Length: 227
Image (tube, rainbow, N blue to C red; front, side, top):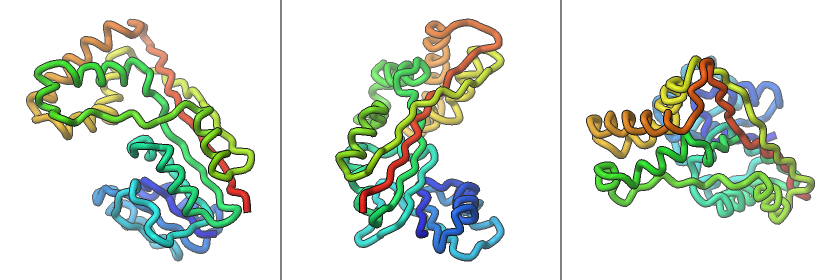
């Protein structure tokens, strides 16, 4: 089996995939040099290699694999209809696709940030940039995979319960994930103001409970192409 791990990060799952599937080759792709440095620092494993490149540009001409795996990465790539068509084209007959993505686009934690990007002074500072929202509804992925030649695609929306100390902890969670993208498009002082206003607006919309139940939705997708 030839495997590719799109958005491999530190390579922890890349190595595990390679071992458990007894793959002949496994390629981990990520655009972060820092993450890949950590991946390469792990114990060398025959058949595993890493490349720094944009996962949105996969596959290169002629690239063919038996399994495309991606854990919490494809939600950063635009136009999922075109993306999944490209991924399907890279699979061998009977090749498999296994993907997990957050599906929090309609949660207040994400909606507030999107709304705030159209409020001054942030709107002017962002310029033409707005965070895209490419993730589709679960049934849309099932339909799309079927149209692309996957037999019996399996798509599940799973809610993972996270119990946090309080509503403020949601803001801290988002600072390490969603808001990190916004920070790349704002100067540091303005990003601080953005987070402060984000906190104020978000806390107005969510339940002031302690402990705080934070339901985190993820879409799990699996399919196998028809030979």
